[in-house]
Amino acid sequence: MSESLLNTPDVKDLLTKVAGLTNSVGNPRLKNIVHRVMSDLFRTIEDFDVQPDEFWSAVSYLTAVGQANEGGLLVPGLGIETFLDLRMDQAELKAGIEGGTPRTIEGPLYIAGAPLSKHDARLDDGSEQGEVLFMDGQVRDMDGKPVAGAIVDVWHANTLGGYSFFDPSQSKFNLRRRIETDAEGRYTFRSLLPSGYACPPDGQTQKLLTQLGRHGNRPAHIHFFVSAPNYRKLTTQINIDGDAYLHDDFAFATRDGLIPEVRRSTDPAAIHARGLNAPFAEITFDFVMHPETAAAPNAVVTRAHAEAA
Image 1: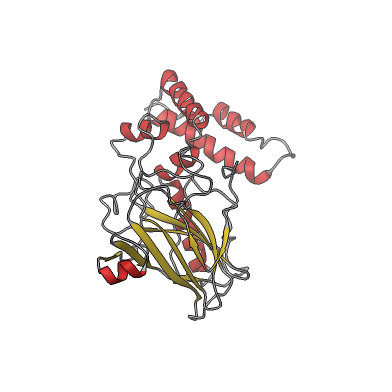
Image 2 (image 1 turned 90 degrees about the vertical axis):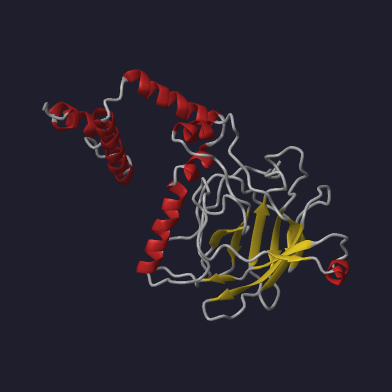
């Protein structure tokens, strides 16, 4: 068997120069990361006998992903975002942080600056018909005490799986709100029960998933950021129980503890009391937050988001 090119002086020298390890300027951490990434890529090319046309096809694919603005969709689809969460879980355990509400992926569709409501909000703009959802709960600390003034930032899809700002048919900040908890740490909101969604069928993410024999569907879910002074920011989402893709999420975001019961109310008196003329759904979900600690990595993830127009 011929010697691996990676073990030859020429390739070792090439990788050292590529990563800038022969000079004393630049970012040392980045240099070491680039050296590892390029070494692993070279080894992959060698081990799988990747041909030039295959390599340039991959480059074209990554270019197309960027042009389609699907990087934030491809990352969870490849399990990378979930892996980052698992690493954060591991780091928190080492820092003595256990329990509380599980984190899970943010996803690519957050928009900052949603309207702020005190204690209670209506998320939908009333233009769409669907199953009305009333959701409530409490934000507490690890000792069970309420966290007053916490901000529950919530966003989700409509009944067709579309998100405002990304779906031009929806009004600005439809199905997006920030809710400040009351003195007992409670929040409530009215909305419509969301639908799951699928990757664009002709998009770049689905193009790769198809080659992997995978679908691009997500179960119905509702996203949350929960934050409060002196507490670790929580990034999470709940899944709607009963969805066909509940445990087959292409983004790998379903976690135990994030599948609350969906209660359906068909009682005429309850329907009338809510000012409705049809059955509705209810979900109760409490968020349990950890105090901030210098021993654990930063829970606030800095990443680019789409901006509200």
